[in-house]
Length: 434
Ligand SMILES: Cc1ncc(COP(=O)(O)O)c(C=O)c1O
Image (cartoon, rainbow, N blue to C red; front, side):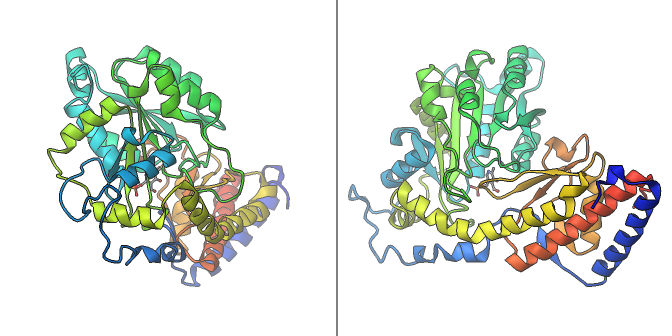
């Protein structure tokens, strides 16, 4: 196979004709496949089946409390300890929530915006109103759409930050916060980032731990460690302990970390964690207790009986990896075989997490997603990995192989590569009429 850019007009025209034929054949085969959201597969969910019934009528915590009654707004001590291991924090810096870390993120950001969760009192929105501007957030791109939705829902301005192989471009980040004190936060997915799979380097984490020194008042790093233990292979890099480093640097308040068991046990029935300085946690809980008397301690107890410590969790995650790895590898193989020699796309080769980030030639992502949909394969909408769903170059597509069965992943990715080739060949031929 020759790279498309090295083909003559005639060769390209021939390529388009043959791809169109193959596409029509695929369309008529009536596929219905879905590579959209990063949900765990059914075989992964089954790995935690033992959660059901594990308490066996024993609801008593190590300190003698009955988990079935009201109270314990910070979460049960056993689960705080487990969260501390996951997030590299101290148990007193950790609280345990319900089944969604995203809910905790939203509640934290909303409360900081409207009520202020800071020693200095003033909320982000009040400061912005006083200074006649808008609250802004740094959004590494490509990134997680639901982070952007939180900012959008609260009327914040989002500033895209380029990602490089070590995490968000730290020079860009530092200059941005220095220049604008209304930049109040940055979203980070430090390990196996969604969707690029990047693991932040020590240099990046260390720089982030000191970022508050350059930023305006009450700046927060929203550290969403959703894929903290989600390795596909042995020997993935560990992430430097942000909260510890920030504490040493005198900036503990600038760090708010999150994680959950959504992709460890049950995505719809897990537990979540938030970790920050003790002061931040106290201020958050004060606000949170206006809406809750206590979390679901029974589910927290089920989880710590099932996964008592980080070692148990890591062993459990190896079983997840066995199920996920063949799907990721099938995708890589297909991309390599079908697109590698053609030099018309770039994609990531993650060592963990749930996604592959794929870049088409500029201007083609929307068209590729449409072509694939018309051939029976749903993909995450083009643009989703950017604030306001607007990818300025229309290139990025997020592939999520976890949910479909392995044979479906193979079928879906074959359709995808066909559509990438078709859209690219048409574009290069100047015949790009979808
Ligand atoms: C980066 C990231 N954060 C958070 C979540 C959702 O987490 P939770 O289920 O704990 O709300 C996801 C789910 O895909 C994610 O990719």
